[in-house]
Structure formats: structure tokens, C-alpha cells
Image (cartoon, rainbow, N blue to C red; front, side, top):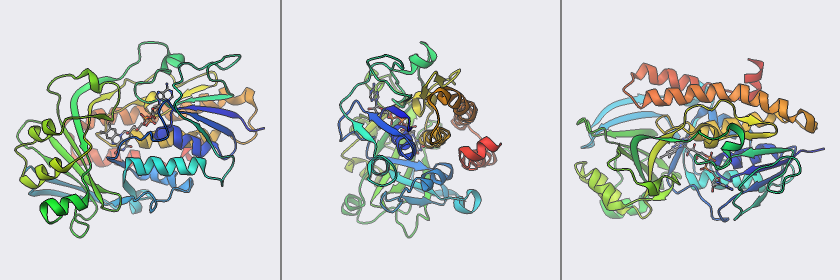
Amino acid sequence: MPLKIQIIGSGLAGLAAARILREHHDVTVYERGGPDTSTGGQGICLFSNGVKILQTMGYDRVRAGGVPCHGYRGFDKQGNQLQDFPIDFKGRYGADTLCMKRSDFRDELLYLATRAEGGRPVEVVYDTNVVDVLLDGGVVVRGDVVVVADGVHSRLRHRVVGDGYRAQKNGMTCYRVAPSAEKAKETLGYLPEWWDPTTSAGRISALQSGDGSNRMIATYPIRNYEYINFSCLFPTKQDKDTVQESWYADGDGDEMVDMFADYYEPVLQLLRTATEVKVWELQDMDPLPHWNKGRVILIGDAAHAMTPMQGQGANMAVEDADALRLLRPGLPREEVEGVLEQVDAIRRPRATRVLEDTRQQAKDITMEERIANLDYNCGYNGVFEAVRG
Ligand SMILES: Cc1cc2nc3c(=O)[nH]c(=O)nc-3n(C[C@H](O)[C@H](O)[C@H](O)COP(=O)(O)OP(=O)(O)OC[C@H]3O[C@@H](n4cnc5c(N)ncnc54)[C@H](O)[C@@H]3O)c2cc1C
């Protein structure tokens, strides 16, 4: 008998889990937003650890417009290149690292979860704000397994760990925009070297202010170079409660341009062309004591919110989804709790280490330490290898 699995949240964690679990079980996803729910049109990097798992799901990088990354470059705020660190992700870790538009990434996961082939298609129930989960005899959401993937401000986390576990701001704010190549060519007449496919060499570029103000613009091309992601980071000037709730809240474009007004003109011109500006005060959460209780388990940001300093949040969500493969076909309902404990034992220590490394990465660490972190992150080969130890 397939298990009846309810997933709360159709973000990146919820949809990745839905795609994995549909192979052998009956899966329903509840989403408080509508069918147009998107995690924003800006960029996201899926590193080799996430991409290895995505490949096992039939993830089509061409359909998702994934741009392979081949390392990092550092620039000053006038656009002078300071460093270049080529990285052969595929050779070193067994799969490429891909930069994508978030909405393309989510669309591909949704497609893989709901298409006709590959087990019973997942049912996605939109406009449903789940307020509670009860396993036996409850009336809110019932199932053999409940996977809570409702994001950083999870309303259901307390059901698993009790009250008192919340994300905390870390003092940095990030504006995110994704101007189009068409608009860039219209405005500048060319693509800057860190965007142009003939010169960017697939690098993620960081334009550092270099003046002690701790401002930085991280940029990488997405959707086959048709867009570019700008993540514009700076120390928070003033807390804005409005950006607490969602990490894809709308931001003020003029404020963003003012904050980087001393950067060289092509960057400012591109920032000015952005039609959708998102703002987020970076937040993370101290490690939880456990992720599961009975037949309920937390995954994604609900379990381990971290800042984007290593770009590992969604990668951890994909790894969580993969770990749910331990809910093997034909698993009796009575054994679910034990399997979720096993998932917790495998996933939580690793996500905790990645969170701690991410906190370190926000400070000044050496390139050797960064590479050691990359080796740890990208060297992961999925849950079955983790079980074998
Ligand atoms: C600026 C920035 C850059 C980042 N860059 C990267 C990167 O390059 N690489 C990377 O791996 N990670 C990155 N991350 C982290 C990554 O975006 C998150 O880790 C990831 O999106 C978390 O996915 P999630 O599904 O857990 O949560 P979410 O994407 O927030 O999804 C939660 C879903 O649950 C729904 N929901 C919430 N409450 C309820 C409810 N009560 N009932 C029903 N539905 C509900 C929401 O509507 C939403 O659809 C970045 C984050 C930020 C802020």
C-alpha cells in the first residue's frame, strides 16, 4: 500500500520532496498561495550536491535554462577584475553547478511532480493556508506522513519542536533584481564582461565596495544568459518589519540605487532597469533539537534556515527531499516514525555543519577555507551513500 503523504508548502523543498515521494506514494501538496505562486524571478545557484540529486529526478537543465558555473571572480566597484578562481565542479564533484532563475527552477520541479509519467501525479491544492497538522483523528491535515515545508517563518514548526525557535536577522540586507539582456543591450549597447557569454567564462562575480562599508554585489547570468541576477548586500540601515514575513517582499529600487551610488555607471544603469525589486533582511535560525515528531517531519527552511552566503539553503532542501527516499515502497505505516528518525539522524548534523560554515563564511575567511567548505558541501552523494557511511 502506498503511504498517504501530505506536504505543506509548494516552495523548493515541498516540490522537490513531492517529486521524490510520488514515485511510490500518494502525495498531496497544500499551498497557501495560488497557482501563480513563485519564489521570485531572481537567481539561485544549485551546487553540485543539489544537481547530482536533481539529475536522479529527471531534472532537465535545458528546460530550466541552467547556466553552468565554472568558478568565481572578484571585481572592485569600478569593475576592475581583482581575482579569478576557476573551479571544475563537474570534474571535482561529479556534477555541474547551475545558476537558474528561481521561477524556472520551481516550474521544473512542479512539472516533475505533476506530469503524467513516474507514479501517481502529485495533487497540488492551492489557496489553502494550513494552520495545524494532526495525525490521528484530526481535522486539519491528516496523513500517514506529514512533511512540513512551509519556509523560514514556518507556522507549523512549533508542532514538532515547541515554541521558541525562530529565525533571527543577521544585520545584513539584500536587494535582488534580474535585469534582462535585451534591456541591458538597449541601455548600455553591450553586455558587461561578467555577463557576456564570450568573456564571463561562467563565473559567479562579486563586486566588492572595498572601502570598509561591507557592501557587495554578487552577480551571475541565468536562463541561458537572458537575464542576470544581482544580489546587492549591505549592512541593514534600519529594521523594516514589512520584510520580516517574506524573503520575496518588494523593495524600493531608488533606495537600492542610492545604496550603491558610488559603483561604476554600467552597474547603476542596469540596476535602474530592473522592474521587479525584492528585498530581504538576511536571517538564519539556530539548529533545532530534532526535525521529526511522530510521523511529522520538517524540511527546507522550516528545518534549517540559513543565509545565502554559501548559496546552500535550497541545496539542503533538495538533499532533505532525497533523504525521504528512505520511505521505501511498501513501508508499513507503523515503521514511518522510525524512518523519519533515521532521516533526522542523517540530515540534521550535516545541515547544522553547513549552517555553521555559512555563518563563518559571512566573516573574512581564506580561499582555502572556502574551498574546504565547497568540498564538504558539494562532495555529498545522496542519502543511500550517507546511510552506508
Ligand atoms: C537572497 C537569497 C539568495 C539565496 N540564494 C540561494 C542560492 O543561490 N542557493 C541556494 O541553495 N539557496 C539560496 N537561498 C536559500 C533558498 O532560497 C531557500 O533555502 C529556499 O527557497 C527554501 O525553500 P523552502 O521550500 O523551504 O521555503 P519557501 O521557498 O519559502 O517555500 C515555502 C512555501 O510554503 C508556503 N506556505 C507557507 N506557510 C504555509 C501554510 N501555512 N500553508 C500552506 N502553505 C504555506 C509558502 O507560500 C511557500 O510557497 C537564497 C535565499 C535568499 C534569501
